[in-house]
Image (cartoon, rainbow, N blue to C red; front, side, top):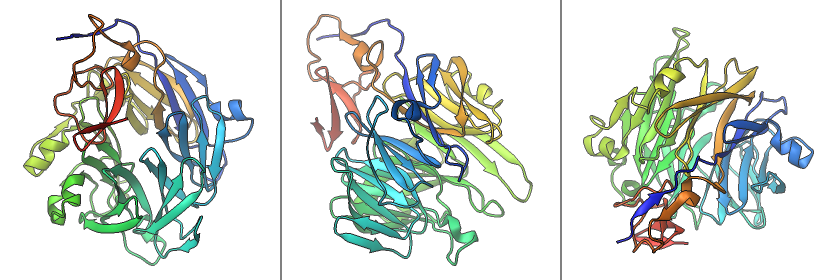
Length: 423
């Protein structure tokens, strides 16, 4: 039996950080961070000679050497390659927000009410999800969901969309409390799950079949909460209450950990007290769902010194684990009008340093390392193949692979889907 050994080389960190800038100031930027230093805090402009745009909201890898960025107030989806070069864009999706992909199409939520598609213009009363061909950059379809849809994730042929109704304070509609489930192939809503928790506003993290997203409540009498959602339960037609668990913790910024848990920074603001409270959580979604929420949540249980380190931040604004190396990042927006910081920890939570970014750094995407640890740092001790053993992107052997995750088998990367490894 071949044994897996890790070459003792330092991690090769290559990280794109999206700085939102100030709304309506047309000053969104990309920062490029490598290993232990900032290469540029205006990377997109350095490469392309012009601005990224106004208030970028999300970044995602669509497929090999193609990255998408939603630029909300500029009403564009910008596509770049791994060198930062602009390779295309679409202006079909106004007021665009969050992104998901199946590797062929890009899916984006929008607060808008009109979308131009290859089949003609579609109009909606509420918000919508658009489907963009990642080869032509054309919007091929769109479907109405709830008001002001925010987080979105792709799982097993379906899209899961958290609706906020976040404009309820200024428009003639109520807050939303639902998750829309969409067949990605047909772009039809197949069901709507009511969580009973209003204003499902945040990014959406996915770990296997589980989702994590948050609600800030109404900032007055309705408390913030985190929702752990079981995609398989929803697709199997189980009742709404069997599809999710509501946790009495805010989950404002969340991400998947290297152990398939969720790392969460909760930031709770109240207009009653004018106080902002922080919480730091590690959430095991399987234990949460199995116990109905009585187990699976660990407070102040992030690795190493992360909790004490982040407690000194002025305004935490994002958290991220590099899926290739396990290094952990969080951002501090400080006063929102001055340059924020990127904080870095080892996979074990050892504080490594903080680095100045631009305004409101809050979204992250790691690039596949070219050298060092991660995928390229994994070698077999005797040069043989892995005999069908399965490993995650950190080279840790996996006995129960999760649907939709990327794994390594026989020295190659595959997506695990329905007990099958897809290239």
